[in-house]
Image (cartoon, rainbow, N blue to C red; front, side, top):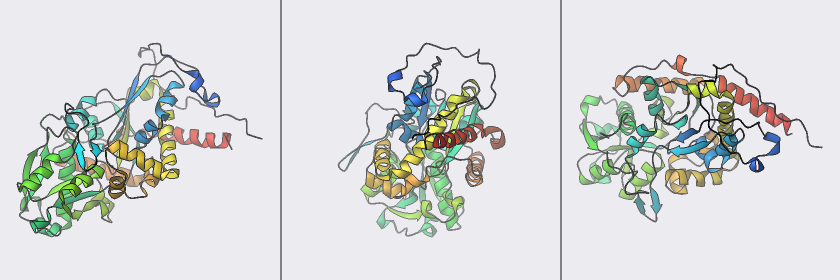
Amino acid sequence: MANSVKPVRKNRFSTRARATRTHTPAKTDRAAVSPGRTIAAIDHSPIRVDRGPIPTATGIAHQLGWLEREAALDGTPLSVGMGFRPPVIAGDDLRATSPKAPPRSSLLSAAAHSDHLWEGDSTRALWERSEGRATRLIGLTWVETFQAVVAMPDAGIAGPEHLAGRRLALPFDRTASIDVHRAAASRGLHAALGLAGIFPGEVAHVDVDASAELGNPYAAELAALTSGDVDAVFIAGAAGAAAAARIGATAVANIGRHLDPAVRTSGTTPAAIVVDAELIEQQPNLVVRLLAVLMRAGAWAQLNGPDATHLLALETGTTVRDVKTAYGANWPDQLHVDLSHRKLDALRAQADFLVTHGFLPRAVDLGAWIDPRPLGVARELLAAERVAWV
């Protein structure tokens, strides 16, 4: 006989008075809601969830329809976006999804002040916090990612020790408030030089204008590489691996495969899950439930690896082969949401790098930024559901 006990949802931590938040009526399709998980409808203001074009539990949950369904349980209108519009793969061609699409980084900055929950590059999250935006860090994920410095085969660069005296590309986007792309390249190049004991002053950094990439990642840097304007560039992720392979560039420093996590640390390793402080105060149960959805999505990906890989290929605008090349065949096993010391130490190192190299206006107090309450309650919620439906 099935267990008839149902999960009990309680307001687990106190909040401020909710009278300051205005509400508009919202319709909920109760027929689409599982009867065992129905919650009394309360009209809420719309919220927006966003994610970066990397492996995220948010992306998986959105494509499965879980986020919108969870928010609909109490009548909260929810929309899900992406920091930039990924390219579309058609055969061997890489094309932007729209010729009028704005640059990737400007989309990141334009969306920054409208998102209520974000999962993606920690550089953006740290910058917003450094600028004074009231956000809270509620989780971290770490999916091992392809990160490499690449060069053309005829450049005479066989390893990082051969980068001394060479011209290294540093992309910039003059339209971005925070140049996430440049920060990632700077971090990757520093890591590669450090592997060979080369000081930054021993190479020439060449600025490459990537303001008009139009959703085509690494196009400007790789164009400079093929034209001979630079000798090496930094790339990452499925889109970077695919773009480098198309021009025949080879990795001369495979940072993402290094044994030391400190070398692999970047904006996306770990990736951050942040939420508006106001949303936690006004709708704490919704934040907990959405975080629980992300944790369920990670578990689903682990059990449905091939399907999850296909969904990630759609997310990144690449192919299944590109996804496996960039993140490994076992990437679905890595979508664990937590606030472990290992991930927090890496995030702290990333924050220190961004401050030192001028990407953040001021240091971020991680202790004041972190709010572990939603994660703890989400774990209790999932544990209660497992007991209830055994």
